[in-house]
Length: 69
Image (tube, rainbow, N blue to C red; front, side, top):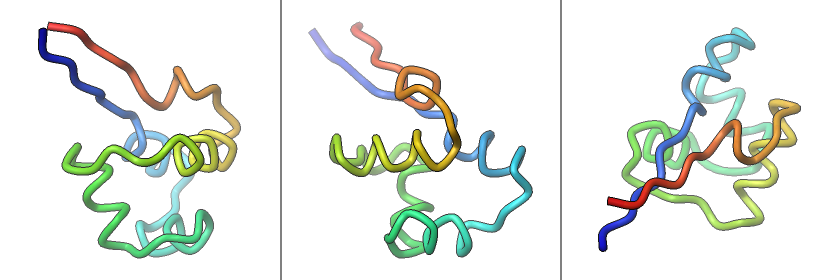
């Protein structure tokens, strides 16, 4: 069984009207990390995922979705 995780990071970031650079600074990572997360090429650690959810004032499940195939 294959699993994947999708995210709404780009959507929430754009809703807040902030750049990738500002978001990266707000959560303590590089802009390249933000790009990789938004493209789905990098799944953040639990700690970073929680920081992202907290940054957007959202629940983790609103930001990240787990799919089984």
